[in-house]
Length: 247
Ligand SMILES: [Fe+2]
Image (cartoon, rainbow, N blue to C red):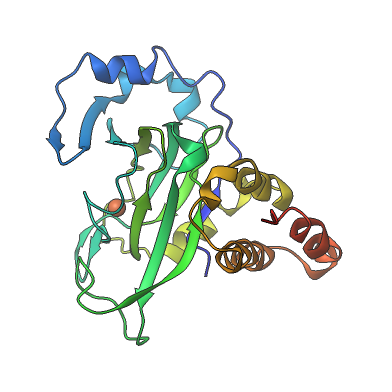
């Protein structure tokens, strides 16, 4: 299953003020181990017209996560934001303000196939999905599955918007699959656009063997193709595989 989808809502016209400069004028809510968390009032930073492009209204505040270069899964470590049966976030809408090219977002499942129930893995996990969080459009992301970050050479700043239904509500319980259906009509329509985000982020292949790079790209393709009618898929494999860097 694919754990994220790029939404076709460009960032043009999104801001009243520069979001990084705005955060730098605030006290971080958390500042520890190379990790800073800012909480911003949307009304201070975003234009209302831009926020209204999403199918679900946003809460009045958003998070900005900052991670120093080369910090890997330190703070927070691999985790999930939904704690069954009744607490936490089902999904988030994230994009990078800085550091997109060299950082990765990964999802994990228990290696033995058992359902993951705790906030942090209590047994061996395997990577099941991996993307670059884009900087030109928001990414709808699953927070009910274990996830973690690997940061490259640039400090990574991420904006995280929280739609009003993203926090678990026992009166209206929704799953990641429900979220996908709710947003499907604003997914990026071109699979190649999504792959391009991966392709431009050449640095993410640093430290990966050719085998890992191939597996990463093929997994991206397979997950994306699930969304398309078969007729649209012909020829795409070859086209996209040609973009895998050879080293
Ligand atoms: Fe998270």
